[in-house]
Image (cartoon, rainbow, N blue to C red):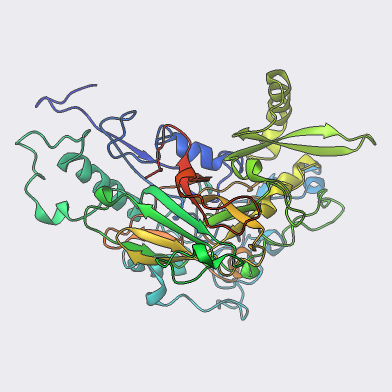
Length: 502
């Protein structure tokens, strides 16, 4: 470690990748963010990253990502072949050289129409102050004007660098102050630390809610003799416990995330034209994934006809795919669990697939346009095992996962895994890595409001640290036998070195 003149080690700050970007190639985004914490899940008291602090940006994605942010729009390939410029300015602000047919903001909701200087009639109402995080409301006017960086509709670095930087700077500052005031890897042991006596700093968390453990209770109503009176009903319950030490006296706070999947829908941006053929398979009619709280279901006997997969497929925390030919010689997709249980292709086959993608990346991932592949992977069938669920706070750093709205969760089904801010199925249409899966936002009729994710600290308003946890049966608390209508309990387990089994 390098040291300053006073002998203190130099600290390093890390910012995780923002949502809605092409970086990480969709289904690997969660793993990349996890690796940014050395797979420990949090920076504070992290033995693998001493003298390190960090901030999450997954809830600060480009507010108008789904309709364009002022970047040049690509011309159709036939016009490029005719020798025209390969990009053209989109219709943002006072730009007399724009081309309306290249502008994704068809409703004029991100900026007023160039012709009428008014917002479109189909735009959703602007979110009121009550729906914003208090720390982010001051930026509302800038975002309304599509100018988070105070330059309307100009994001010259692309979606990987969202324009909303000030909130991120404040989060980094809180994390850095936290590093100087306490913790096993802190810099506060020196009496010369200017922050050691500040009572106001000591009452703010430097990290968002961090998973510590969970308890899962499930019941068979045919055997109410084993009913646990601690619970209000015989319905399954899943309670998440977050690290109280890292909360530093703060409480949990719910964000404005919409967990109702019937409101989710991807944008219809793929039009079948001569110069822009529709991909095969066609885009999905609904969004199956998000950065919200998601639970994975499978049958009690490890199989169920209603959903694909089983308990093992629920344990997969990163999926990948291979391009293959089926028995008829047609293009097909083979999905496999890259991190977790299950079959893995040979290293040679994986390397060959990576080389195939590498040859096409400049035309696809870099341009964030899967259409240029002329073949895109079919959706992962195991995405249907995962369901969104809202949270309810009960104090003491605990949050109850509301399972009552999951219709497929019945007496023969169990919750096998839970994840938060951990997208699994973003490929191929880049719609799952977001806190804004609603149809209005993804169609460009509403803004992706910063701070729209599921869980925060209440005063510092830091987003939860992402986690993926498998729920294992707790043998000491199992009652009864197979098919005997017994009560069962389970607890969380995170992949090492992260721990969440309290």
